[in-house]
Length: 483
Image (cartoon, rainbow, N blue to C red; front, side, top):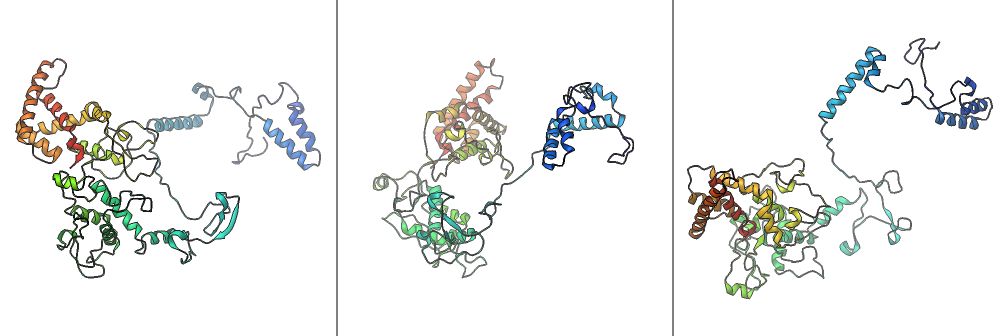
């Protein structure tokens, strides 16, 4: 090659293998019929025909492949390459092997959204849009300015002239002039603590929903929750906290009303703080009631619509699993991080990934919320597989062994004190004398049975007895029910 290459090197030869591009031994002018047509066309003046012939020749031109004599089929063929080329190939191969052994971590990313419509379309940017007649984007009606639904906000609305209107929507929802938001939130928090809300249809406050059992209480809670916080660097005079409030209580309704401590008028504003709302409700005398009520109370309020007693509630699925890990001393309290797929990891159930297509396993068995729908309240079912899970599942067996080890690690304790410790850990109470006697008798029988089975059970008889006893305690309803 009499000309220099792109790097400025003179007299460089380049070999191009044109396999299957023409007949072997044919003259240069007849290497390929396509090449002939291109040469004939190039002599003309029709630029379009020349371009088409060039494109046809380019598509027919094939570079080297595995049939070429220049193709490297094995590492031994690399001996024909210069040393620097072989060194570069070896370094690249070593890096590739290293990446295969130690794959880099996945790239972290977050999904996000922004205002502005669909880019490069008629809906790009923020602006008013036309009505889609019968929902079809192909049939457009009149241009409608941005605003809230008239049925909710009325005809007299300030126009939205900047941005998309999401900020205006948030301000409208949280406005004191829109009390429905506060009512819905406090009703759901109340239902979370009591099992039933003041309005028993938490997603329907309309005409088809149930009426509130205590409308004044619902309004007072909503007003207190949404009012600006007072006495903490804000406006207004200092007012007592819910814990040290005055002796005034909410007006009675039907003779049995939930009793909540109120501050002097105006009430203590919670400033939309859910944490303070939880504290206000949980410090009330209504929340501190027992689920066991006198017969006269049950007769007067059989459905407990007046909250004359506490509803007996089963823990949610996530709390059941976390409770099992906690009593066994295995719960990992670490906050944040990536989700886990393995059900047996000791992390809180909040960090377990949900597979939407999987309708089996612990979640569905204990009525976990359906992740494909919006769920305002969970169903509570009692079925035989729940008991079988608590008796046989390897996860439960592992927690049983961990709980037994936790009790036996105290070498100075005897069986009686260990039973009391187990009841304190699991049920947050002391064992009764009868429960202690039953536990001691069971441990004695279990130790005798373990000695007989020593050939098939290598663990010490005492540890086996305690593991069996701990599994009985874990299977009790008292562990997963709140009274």
